[in-house]
Length: 325
Ligand code: ACO
Image 1: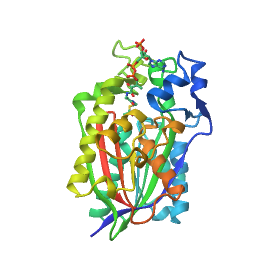
Image 2 (image 1 turned 45 degrees about the horizontal axis):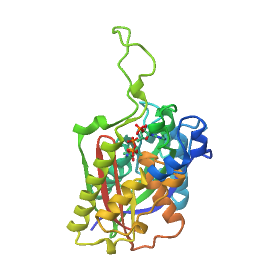
Image 3 (image 1 turned 60 degrees about the vertical axis):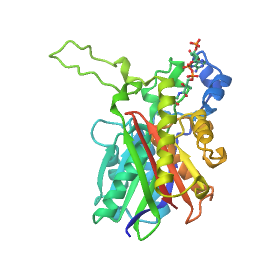
Image 4 (image 1 turned 120 degrees about the horizontal axis):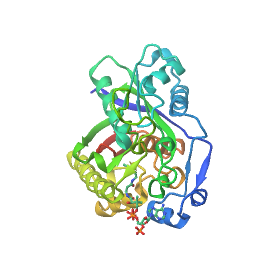
């Protein structure tokens, strides 16, 4: 059976580290509040590099690790809610940067579930067409859509990118996915709104307040716990597996308390969830691939291990994927 296998992973994050204490100097907050409510201790924040810098770096590392040439790349998909431009896509910018002249390149928008949605699309291309491989990246510079005077959001997010190089294989790889969306709830988590302002209407030009990230934290918390639990249950039930068959669960890193609830409700030991939120905060579409890349880099995954990626995000969207490493 034709499958899509992860061959290499990589991550790229800004050098600048902003700690909770740094934030306490610009808004009325504290390390104690942020750590206890979210699990975050510090995050990486761009010093001016835009998203294309991080995603291009990930693509270069992936090619080097997988030992493939640029002209052999068939497909590039980048998931992001903070691209450099409306057009071109980040994927086309990556294509130019690495010289992958034979690839098809485009972006997808599914917020923090974006990496899983992009993997899902690549899996279909690889299994049902002549595509042999793909570079899939999630990358963000969320710092540009944050209101740095709003303590309820500015403490949560970080910048960076992560990705995977995939190849067609005869077994293993992506085994099962469960993805979904609920547009009815889109207003509980928004960012990057641009008003329609032109010379023929009365909308003032300039940055709209809705450009900045807005979130109903409690509703997002409820949505996340309910849908991730349902999605994880479905994936395990439909594949006749239990948490014992899974080496690691790699959740979207939004809030350590969300993962604690999921771990408790599903009776999965918390240690099985790979967490790095304390060092990166919530990097939206980049959070799952950055975590995956760390696991891989540390040598914690062996070929044949089963892992589950699971995320939720703006839209609202969610996605869970069962993969044999
Ligand atoms: N520092 C200090 N106090 C703060 C801060 C802060 N940074 N932010 C809010 N507060 C205050 C509020 O003003 C409020 O004060 P009040 O009681 O005097 O009115 C109090 O803390 C409680 O505020 P809540 O918003 O009710 O705090 P809550 O316990 O819900 O925690 C949080 C907020 C962490 C955002 C939580 O709702 C949450 O985790 N939600 C899940 C959403 C999430 O993780 N989103 C991440 C991005 S979305 C995504 O990735 C898909």
